[in-house]
Image 1 (cartoon, helix red, strand yellow):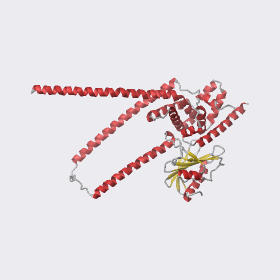
Image 2 (cartoon, rainbow over the protein chains, first blue to last red):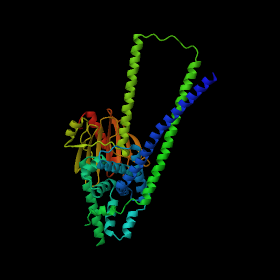
Image 3 (cartoon, one colour):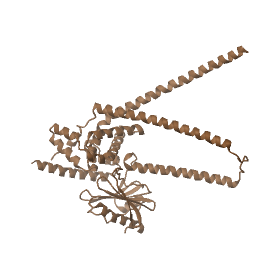
Length: 198
Length: 255
């Protein structure tokens, strides 16, 4: 009787050990995969920062005119990417998505900047004695946001009007009209600055 | 004349520095960790709540007196009622899903998301009405000299007419296919001012934007209509346009 009990308990112990080993092996296979996935997300994030960080920052700066707010927008855009994990068909699609989100978030933040007077870019251009570039930046800065955004996307990012239209959710005709008016306004401002210098 | 292409040279002065890079990535990592903790807490709380509900229900049922132990008779009436309830449940679920999608879509037409309707140009208001199937007409009460007009078909989701003036004046009229706001105008929550008024007996919401534009929006015949006006004396000039559009819709055509 005692022998029987001893045999049963030994078999039970062996079975329990086998079960534990199997569970541990399964967990060991799953956990490293999860750890690798987390590294991939971080690596992807760094890659986006390296590839698109400057253009996101520049577009945000064109709206907000100060580095602190532009940096906040850069962070918010990357955070959106992390949360939404959008699927992209191509690099161009990824770039357009990032810039569209940047434009949207910058416009949301725009009103707070009425209180800020800092403009590090202007200070930097003045320090370099680049009056020609300062004139251009001051002129673009003086435009309403809906004009300066098309100027930035057209001249700094090299997008065509139909691409800008798709990005901003408007018709190509509206964007062409806006660009035409922005150029006219810019010419008027720059003309005044140039004449004023004479 | 200074060339505008210098703008690109200006922008090249703005760069992501190493400090900024590490700061941004560090902040994101921190936010992600906090999100994961919050998510775990939510899951555990939800599971705990389910367990409490299940055990609570079991306890109540166990202690309930006077339960009719006889199974209900299956009759034709009961079956019909069951079918009606199931259909109603499915319809309710479908309505809820559609409403949720519409709500998400209406949110996404504001500043936050990715869904974009690519409008196509039409040559006239009549062509726009035909292609979109929506009741939209030219208006005469635009308070500035119109130099350009654009007719946009938002793939049947909305129809829009935009009038441009000589200065930066703009008047944009939109009619949606349902009650979702398709004006395309976003406002900063902290500074928007909404005012509820009545125009010809119809409740209209007036909202101002950060650059002094005015948006009037209302719902008639199950459709959201909007007028956005940027220019001088917007508050006075927008109401006649609203009135004209209401009259057009009442008359079923141009007033």
